[in-house]
Image (cartoon, rainbow, N blue to C red; front, side, top):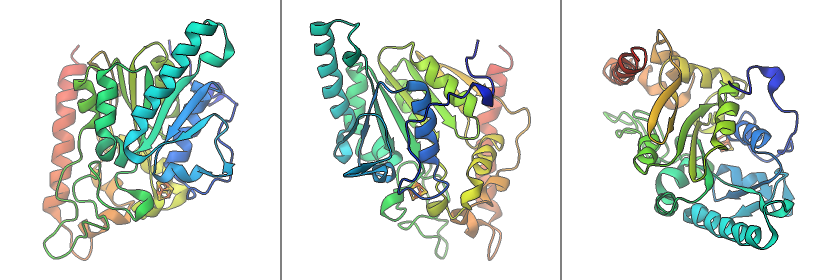
Length: 312
Ligand code: SF4
């Protein structure tokens, strides 16, 4: 049975202090807060260059758990060193010693998860490193000016893929990091959204059962880069789920299950219209071909899910 069923079940403990330098309404902050509510005080957070790095500007930090800053491509390699050190301590001091039972979490943006840090992450999964890898996916390089990343969706405007002339913005599709991790046979892989908080908390709770690499990919609304209203973070995240653009799912030892299955999808344009990065699809002229392509790809995905999971 799920441990978290409603707002009253959300733990009151806070391990992220208010007042960090992140933009108002940033999804990365909300995800970190809720992740630590479940993983708790005995967590060591590894961070790399990216938006969340500005939560900790020496000598100040908004994070109330041990925090290590690594170079961009090395989050998972640094996690390996920390895990090894803890395991050696555990052998020396025994499992009941308070100082040895920390969880190690690599908390990174999509630049590190999909692109620059992928090599060290893939190697860590291959070695079956016991760690959490949590990606706040804002679908671009947010803190350096919103450049294209491997997570940028088709037709999004970025500073390196402007929609000029015939160009639609990003011409490539988003990499499927969930499937890439699943192909590595990680014990637990999940997607989460700030709009579905109990789903997120229950997934973090469930992941504690597994020894080995555990991935979370969170759609991280970025009001600044996406050109969205900072009050609308949760509403936009909910629309991403309800239009089918951000499926909520998990895979346990490769077996995929969707944790929210919409019976009917809202039109994708309800989601796209909330963000300036997609404005060129609607103004000055409506680009029906591109909007239909996005809608069609979402529907094809869900048709497969409905056939498979609703007929079980
Ligand atoms: S640029 Fe986007 S992801 Fe980065 S801190 Fe601001 S809102 Fe968050």
